[in-house]
Image (cartoon, rainbow, N blue to C red; front, side, top):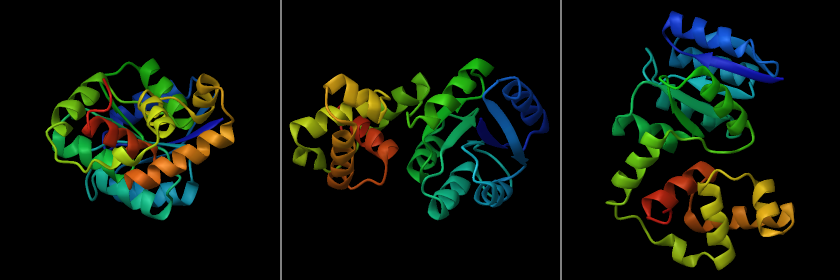
Length: 210
């Protein structure tokens, strides 16, 4: 059973999303938070499998709450669910440690699928978010740290950017899962990033993804 914490300051949104997720045989909304501060407190106390995080909330916004949760619990899996695609909201949320970023305009089935994919370690981004990342980040002056990657590490980075799990990468490349984990660890170190999501952001920023 996937244990979910739902953080959103709009009661009707919480009621609607929670009602749908409770119909899923593999999901359970274990609690709700009405602001960012409460989201942090409940996330650290309950340790849910997935945190659905709104971006604009009182007391502490979604990006700030995400950063605070990740600071104390680096393994937390956070999915941003918001109505906003503004640069000053998208990038801070992902850089803070959110794994996925989807829109409230997505249908309920899409949100449920994003929860399952995120739990597997996949990064789920709306096409609009991916497009904005590519357009915005390509203009940046990011360090060319990827030049230090081996051919295999670069290959795995591109597969990560496609949302592949470690097991799927192992199957695609016909190598052991342990070997994939070693390569991922090495490439994270070389790119000076903390996790897979930041590695994917780096790939887009440096125009490595077509």
